[in-house]
Image (cartoon, rainbow, N blue to C red; front, top):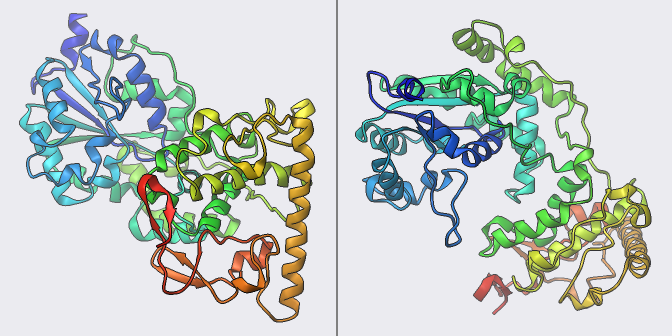
Length: 480
């Protein structure tokens, strides 16, 4: 192994392979492979130093804490949290190292954070090699938007998300790599995501860092699959109903884990969400055509279409109005459970008590079309968790009927030129109150736009105009 080890030392000493992602280019899968086979990497002179996890005794599979903005505010990163831990592990090995986090692609656009990061590795005696993956933008943006909705990042529509991506250079290869290219201390290596998928993500990364041709590690399983049309709709409806950023809540990690648990077993990912319309795709192509071709010629000596072949895309979204009763009930099961969790105490329904959807999803035999086994534990309005599928199915159908009746009431109210009422949530005495949504208040005669469309009240907190809604102990929503 001596020859292989020396391959990663070279005349310039040790190498830091800085894998910067970006997001949605297979980074999590690559990190899982590197973490799982760290001992095998050691045999060829490569160290994948791990960082402490949020739970005692746990180690992270990635180096994301290094890119936290609060951590990077330190003037000297050697004494900053997580960076000091990395310093100790660097000092304990004579190998070259791999550091991987997709968050560096965004965080290091800031000149101060870029300087401190590169200085950190340079001062430790490393030659720096940056590895970055890029993919065709329409599919890339669709995947990124889907992940944003899954993480409850924002209530933006896809066209709004697209405008932000254009403004910030979110998926512009030149914008992402500009600082790395301009720094003479850094060598940049670029990989096509589409080609990496064909070759294998782990194999493509090993080739990018110059690992021996005969050295292999097993390919990892796919991570972060598409949420599916139902999953994206559910996430969006949850955010609309609660009226604020779920991600800003103190108990967000627990809520996110609960959401992921409820996704399992439903097979929603089989009907992948595609928010890119034909007009959106044309806008994206027109925006990046010239710069993409210049980038591909610079790094691959070929045109963009041959480096990152376009994938046919057909817009696919979930329409609650036209969906079947089983599909409506399936989605409402997740929406209503999550809204109850968000509005209640964090401990009401821990992720460990949430049961997965039926095996096989909609085609799951007796449980066809429903998440019948989802336990509700302490949510008394849903009844005991011991209810079986036979008893829960009528309840689901009943809820769907109530939703249809609510929509009909909203339509009648609109026809009479007055604010629609939701008979399930609002009484006549509730008119004139207001809904707090972060720093803004909305009139809540149930007159929100999405209520008018669906008849589903999105009011998370109803209050008088002089009241305030805030988080209390443990993340519970309280009103003084």
